[in-house]
Length: 200
Length: 200
Image 1 (cartoon, rainbow over the protein chains, first blue to last red):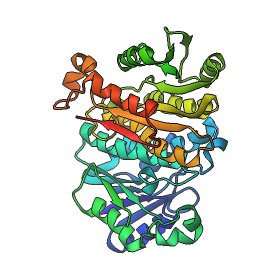
Image 2: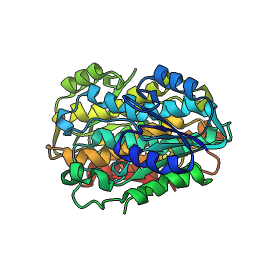
Image 3: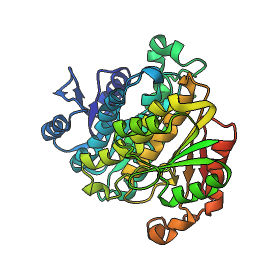
């Protein structure tokens, strides 16, 4: 398979690249590293990326940001950081990318446990993740192409525990192996329209 | 109680106004009718509305729109109709309105079954509804005010069945009485942070 991994330099992306590049041809896209530069908050940048990759068998997105801050300090504009990047960035990857995915191929998005089980300071992150879960369920009803679309929603992965432990008290750390299986299921399986939840 | 109902002229809003005005003082806000004009897609308009109402015991929003169209015809800008109106309109109602709700009072938002059970042409509507579900669960963790925030997610209500029947094959029509109980639970009950689902 020819697999495009967007956000290959992040915590999850690094694991994805390690696993998939042993078994498949991997193209890495990232904001400042990888084979192709891309900013998913910028639709033109997404278009340029796909013009460079050409057709692929799978697209995995592990990119996108949203602001973490207490609700009372969140401005309207703060919400648009997550809306433009993690939410519409991933929607636009499906909008534009579907024409570049081979029949039977897949697009796999990334959200996280906050959609279902938020913690303080995550009104924006939770919103964006919840939005994508419903989007994925809806979009497969409309798709004309024979491609699959799933989203992996993982709990806090082990490699990020040191950084986030205090923000998510009592959350189960998810081993990188377990998290990876969500993406393997989406890319190498036949599932579509699924929210692949890996929370414990 | 003093209750502000936004979108009082819509299918759901009309029922809300009929019920609550028999038991409470009701102020109706709407885009083109009611006691106060408001466009929830416009933050300044929301601010002006609350300056006019002053403090209330409950805010109910049954306003907000999103574009219904097949995925392949949806432009990036089409998604922003729902994002600015139904999604950020309701988020901004909480951001701004929380200062005008008396202690123990409530803000009740409106979404719908598409968040959990979408149908064709609803990538935007589903997304916006799902976003609000996760937002409500997250925002109550951050709230400094002693107020309650819930969202009512109803299936297709009976009064809208003639218009939408063909779009939601096999969905259970929800009686207006049953739908109303979701709002009664939020306004007159003590629940908070709840997605009140009324799907059958």
